[in-house]
Length: 235
Figure 1 (cartoon, one colour):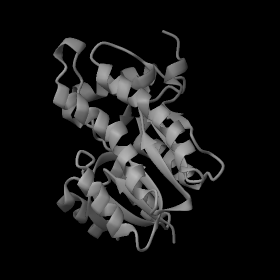
Figure 2 (cartoon, one colour; figure 1 turned 120 degrees about the horizontal axis):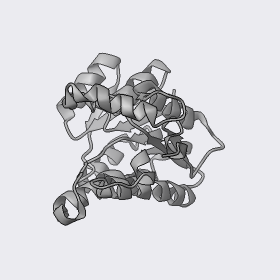
Figure 3 (cartoon, rainbow, N blue to C red; figure 1 turned 60 degrees about the vertical axis):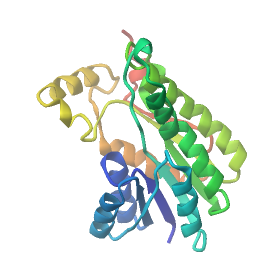
Figure 4 (cartoon, helix red, strand yellow; figure 1 turned 90 degrees about the vertical axis):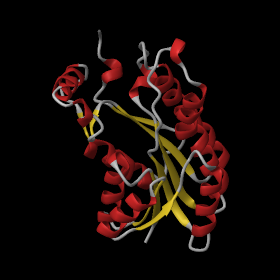
């Protein structure tokens, strides 16, 4: 049975990936900053849990050491630390946290887990469509998401034959937008109108892409755009 580590797997898209991977017969390890939340989901789906905080390299190193004896086949990292402000409002600490969650953290994961991953294994990073759709207030999210594409390419070359790829979502109804209340429906409708397929994304769309990449043994260094063609929609 192949073993997959889902970083950020206690909630949202990470939890959806963990659930599907377990349903598909993978041995799943759920990692999160909030160990209690990771343990709760692990108990529910028959997985195991450990603590990884991408802002703290020592937790990454400890997790790699913990999993080294049995080895690991795949790593999926969904963590993020949004800092959605204009350039004049940038906070350095928040800026560093955003880059660490999306780029620096996964690179440190590669550092510590490279000896643990089996040669036939893979890493899947998470980017986002805003990396290709610049706009006011999306500076940090756009640059970090864009950087993920290059991180996947260069990590793929550095870790070969271990495969490294990225998934770049569009607007997805993953629960993240529930905080908008009544405005959520308008946001999703606007997103649907901005795609070529005429609908917004669902968590299952991203989970499908992630699980495919785990099995796609001849795909490495790529970014898979799961956004209904939004980058190609005129206007």
